[in-house]
Length: 170
Image 1 (cartoon, rainbow, N blue to C red):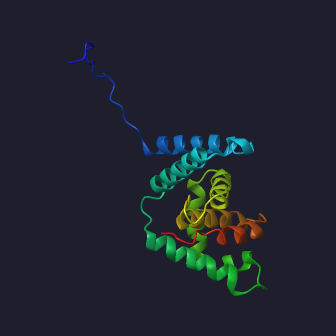
Image 2 (cartoon, helix red, strand yellow; image 1 turned 45 degrees about the horizontal axis):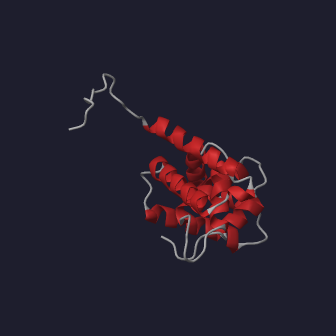
Image 3 (tube, rainbow, N blue to C red; image 1 turned 60 degrees about the horizontal axis):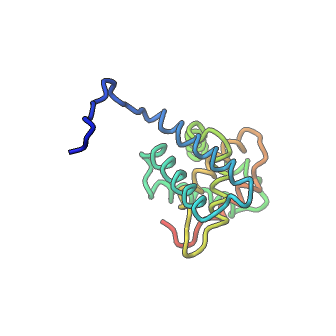
């Protein structure tokens, strides 16, 4: 028996999904901010960033299955690689389902930090250490697609992101 008596809290602790997502977003911002100093990018840093990214996406998109991510990845792949002469914005505007998906993702991912952190982790992944999953790329593509559909120029970044899908991935 410990020497100190445990005193139960009189206030029940309840965490709401929105509050937890806000916490993860704050952690993503801090981790990404630290990455701006190259000496801060250590193995431990990358591992922590990968963990936070995974937890955020698992909680924010808990209704998405691997099959959903694969389906949307294939749609993005088709848009990016099918016709080089058609602007991505035009191809995207022709796919209402992908536009709706992109709008949904855009409302949950608060800013470009998620995308930048995913890029950083993808670039620091290797065949032995995969720090992201295909679903993270799909979420980035959807967020960027929403921005693209509203006039922002993210075509090059979308093409870069789709090429970052890890080779040995879920």
